[in-house]
Image (cartoon, rainbow, N blue to C red; front, side, top):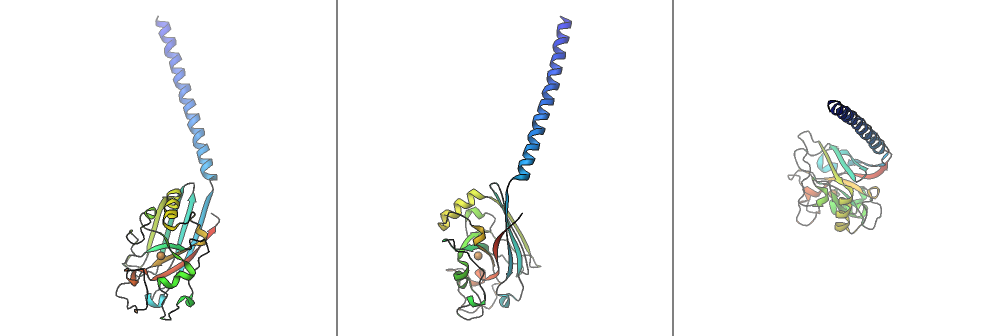
Length: 227
Ligand SMILES: [Cu+2]
């Protein structure tokens, strides 16, 4: 009996060791396969270099870079900006045309009423309309009440959100009646000047929203780049 028990113990030990080896091999192998998959997973990257708009109003050269990185269903939206009117919240979105015309940033000719300022409404012939807001929850598509970044006292901010591409595309399709984000046909705008800015009455805005909130201060066309 004693000897049988000993045999069973030995057999169980061998089984346990083999199991551990098999598990290590399986998971190690799976880990490597996952790492290989991740490394080779196609990544699409889109970038917009933002240039100043209405620098006569801000007295600043607002600039920045917006980046859209897609891996699988994850879209990472990041935006770094500097030369912003400090200590205020800045609306930021991509704008474009639902009919898929390519949007572009407005030039000085966009100032059709000649008041020296390119207001939001004057950007529309070149850039289309407000589409996706870069808030703390872009999928909510809440342009007017979403939470946007606030510039530091030094006039900078860094924004970063990771969203489900599928969810954002669905929310966008519903809001814009456009089935695809088509990032490389859009432009990114940053808006907002201090509310004490003396804007003439000719500066138009969206409905009841003050022109100081919607005034464009930087724009950049989104382009697809390699990695
Ligand atoms: Cu906008």
